[in-house]
Image (cartoon, rainbow, N blue to C red; front, side, top):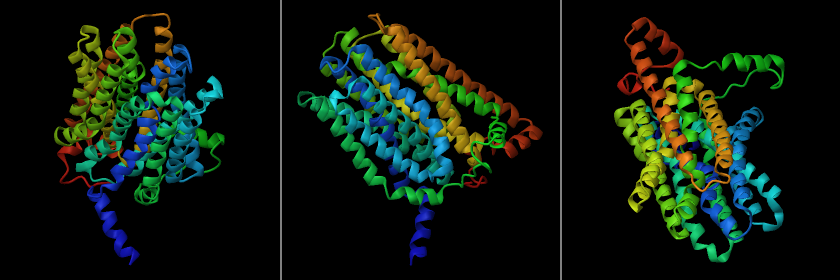
Length: 442
């Protein structure tokens, strides 16, 4: 009887009809990044106003979360040798929940908060890497954009949840705010707990290198095997620059509106909620567009529009300008993540997806942590955030240039049958969106 019920379920997952994979991926990204990372943007002004920390200390707490994100990529690479990916996802979600409960203790001091914000960042990175590779390779090609969109919608929903919950709890104090957000993370962890074992059963097997994970032979084999094709390297560069592109909005947007523009804190919360609303619907809608016009054109358009959204505060400070900037940058911040993950799967193939997506997240996290630390230093003693918007908009224009180069490179290779055959043998079909009738869902 068990076999009879399992087979139809597996068929539904492969066909993309089962909603649970996307929803549980959503729970993971909502917990690890949507709340674990971005809820802090709404909390940062309150930490200063309620005298928990100085403005600079609050900025370093935000940077600590991003630095923890860098460490999380390496931790995930070590844990995957000793634990099943499904166990890693569960543990990461639990630790994010615990970090919020820990931050409810005001008397812990700056060192205590730095530790737990770093833990939340590390676990967020683990969830961003592990959840998609457990779900996307088992999803039908024609639906990967939309399923990836559902997974990364958790980022935007977390922003909406924080923008809704934090203002409601201002009068009750920050301690209750931390505890409430921790409770939301715990709820998401419990709701998705049983699914991950089924996700692990349907995911491609991960083959670790033979021998001790710390032997010289193993390290050499790993380095030798992690040479990346040029299209993947360009995608890595675009994705890393994207990390710099969204930092002003995700670190300082609320403070920019309240401190530099002199708007009430309630307005800052409203525009941050608009950012979250865009982020909540952006991944699915971007994925739906990608399923229709292709992943590469969607990425190119997304980077260009996001660059315009980041640059807009340099030109206008009206309510409409702030609204458009909030929605545009929010829409494409997690939307680009889902499309980029699916594009890495397209150009690299399912067997290399974990490797390529991990490397992309390493590049993203390094650029994010380095960029955040640099931006915190740049704004120290300044009354304006304008320089940060200039840097980030230029970074996003460079991202769009990288995607354009990938399109040109793959078009040139496709026009040369001998090279195209060799490329397909190495990385999979060049244009799967044109070959859905013949390319099997590997």
